Image 1 (cartoon, one colour):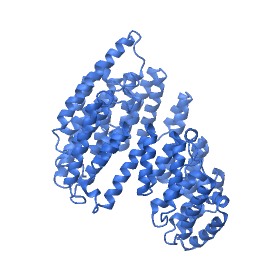
Image 2 (tube, helix red, strand yellow):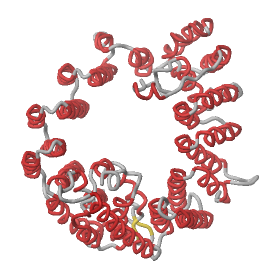
Image 3 (tube, one colour):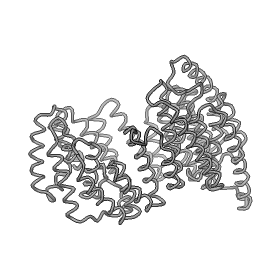
Image 4 (tube, one colour):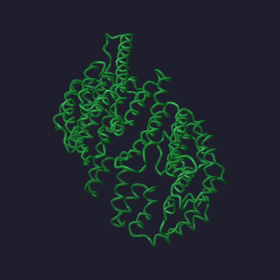
Length: 593
């Protein structure tokens, strides 16, 4: 929906307004005491704005919208008034649970139940970021009626278990002992892929606990049917890969050097590793030709399995040959080349394109180009892509090469080289985004004049108003860079879009009223959870870079939010302004002050 994209742009602009001056050095005449006083006054304004916004939000129709404001406010207040924050979190969860229990799952065109369930889950996650035990207590005290008792719905019960596992994953950061305890409790109820994510996090914090958990997982997996239970099969293979190929990720991707340094090894005895390998091999050998899922997944582990369970590995190779004969040509080709794609060198992958079937060549070229980009061989990657790929795949890889090349040039302070690369980018909005990125880097190096010249070039390349998502992204990036260099021009770019957003939102609400909308509204009010996530997801990188234009013009920023005609959107804009100033998560508004 174009109107939704435009709304996300306008809402995400408010953190830009509240963001600009902290990147620039403070005036020489301003003392530390003056800066601290100014910061305190700014926070006071933001707290007053938060209080008034929270009070108004309680007049909204939708429980999920009210809970969103309570949850965000509680998170912002946690370090300032923990008692009030806990109360707000409790109120949000209580209201959502009451609404869930009163809602009929699976009925109605607006998916009310699942929207409420998602709001509850996201609120629990926010709480877990502050206090994992508190989140766990609230989760267990607020189980929906349909998820507990002898007649409980298995699907809902499983969702509650997954939420506990998500809390445990978050707990590894600050309370690994609690995370380990929760993992052991969850393991009694079954094995899921979430446990692998938890294990990976735990490896970075407590190697002994991680090893203990891994042993318990092996014992549990030995009792599971890994052929018919796909998630259990994936978990077993992922754990085995972590043990046999510790430099690769659980999902068969290379880990970074930093992650390898932080991750403590799993010190399982040889017999336990052998037991897991044997369990996985037996499951793979039991897989039918119609469901060869486990068999295909272990193919890349064959060289390691030959050392651990040679007889089983030999049987696997024979089984691979039998199964591939019954597969359709595309699946057979993929199975044949999968080990090469996972473990082969760039030259080996390129050599294989000579004899590869047509349906595999593009994949081989894509993987080879990706490996070259990762290795920093940009020109060779560009040549292979240009010569052998076409259409959207070619365009995407070339755009990725340009982005990496620009970033490398900026990192090496080669401004002219970066400008030359950007000049060849197509379409126009791509050049605008590249110039904005370059201007941001130039500004951080202290050259405001050049940064402004680059941004003025970028501004001439973007359409106003933007006509599609790519143009919206370009406007956002240019506006974000202007917030660093010439803050008033950020307003000039974004302000006209608010009127356009108001018109489009009014049209969307009307369509929704007559049953032709996109499900963005409920009972005449826009559902804010997805909007909020969008504004803080893909656009969070700008919020992190930029801080405190509100130091220069807090009132104008607030006034911009108030120009939204829909009450829930106006309040959302105010909430984002307060969040940018007060949040200790994003790090932009306060940490750079």
